[in-house]
Length: 133
Image (cartoon, rainbow, N blue to C red):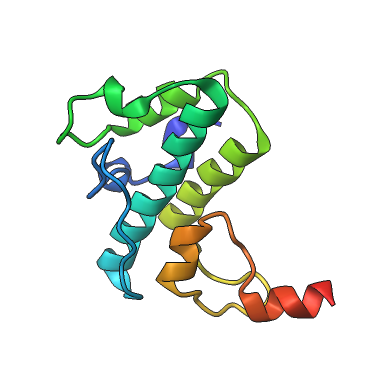
């Protein structure tokens, strides 16, 4: 799938994210603030995984203070595949579609703190308990 199909709104891809700066959990919010905080969290997890699994240090790819462009993210992911990268890439796609953070079972929005700690989460804790037990 072409990058433009995965991320139809490229100008919003890395809004508010600066490589090398840790994600700060934001309070639960809606709209643009939710999207910005969520994108920041997803990219933080993605870059940490790239560093751990592939020994790639994304913050060194761009000078500090400059957001990493969409093409930079796609280049970092090129020829790398594992389930975590696939899930994080999918989370970015869901964010662009407006479905990120929405429980797939009950359709309620999950809180920002929960999503900051686990951005690939697709079920809220209540639905997860119901399905697992």
